[in-house]
Length: 351
Image 1 (cartoon, rainbow, N blue to C red):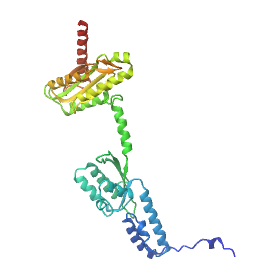
Image 2: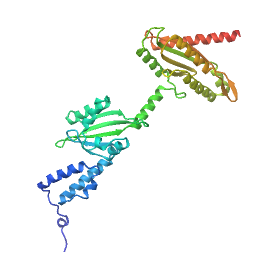
Image 3: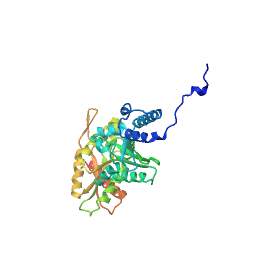
C-alpha cells in the first residue's frame, strides 16, 4: 500500500493561544541566563510548539554569543536583559563584576555615574542611548579610548533600537584599536622625518604656532626660543665615506640633540643637514645656554670606518613673541645661523 505525498508530511499542531504566556515567561528566564542552553535541558517541554520555541531561543543565544563584539540587549528602560560571552569575558578580564555590568543592571545609570565622575565619552554615550530609547534617532555611534595599564585600546560604542512592540536597544562595543593604530601611524609618518623620527617642517611650524598662541609674552621675559642648526662639513662625510655613513652621522646627531634639549622642547629635522629646536617659555639667557649645550653635544667626534671625524654645528638663535609670524621667526633664526656660519668661514680663512 502506497502513501500519498500529503500523508508523508508530518502533522504539526497549530500554536495555541494558551501557550503564549508560558513562552513569554520562558523567554524572560532565557534572557537573564548567561548560558541558557544549560537550563534548557532541565526545562519541561509541554508541547511540540514549546520545543520549537526552545530551539529558536537556543539558536538566538548561540547567535548572540557568536558575535565578535561585546554586545548587550537593553529593555525600554535601559536595563540589561542579556549579554553575550564577549561582554562577560571583557568585564572579567578587566577586573569588572557581572553584578555591576551584567544582566539586571541599568545601563543608563552606569553611563550616568561615569559621566558625573567627569568622563566626557560616557556623557556622550549616555546622550546617544537616551536618544535611541526615545526613538529620536535610529543609531548612535561614538569612538572612545579605553586603555589598560599595558595596552592602548579604542572602541566604538554602537547603539541601535529594537523595534516596536518590544522596544529597547542593542549596545555593542566594537574594538577598533587596529584601525586607530594604523591612523596614528599614518599621522606620525606625515608629521615626522622618516630617517630620524624628529618632527618635520610641517609639525615644527605647528608647534611654534601653538607655543606663541599659548604663551604670548613680552621679549626678555618668557618667550618662545628658536634654534636653527646646520651641521658643519657634513657634505664631506657623504663625499668621502658614502651616504650610509652620512645617515649614521645624522642619527647620532639626532640622539645627541634629543639628549641636550629640555623635555618640553621640540626638535625637528627640516631637511638635509638642517635641524631646529622650538623652546617655549624661555628667556634669552636660558636660550643662549641651551644653544651652547647643544653645540658641545654635537661637537663630539664621530667614528667612521675607523676614523675620527668632527662634524660640528652652526646654531642661530631667535627669541620670538606673539608679534611675529611663524615664517618670520624661522627666517630670522635661519639668518642668525648663517651669520655665525659666515664668521666661522672667515675665521678659518684668516687662520
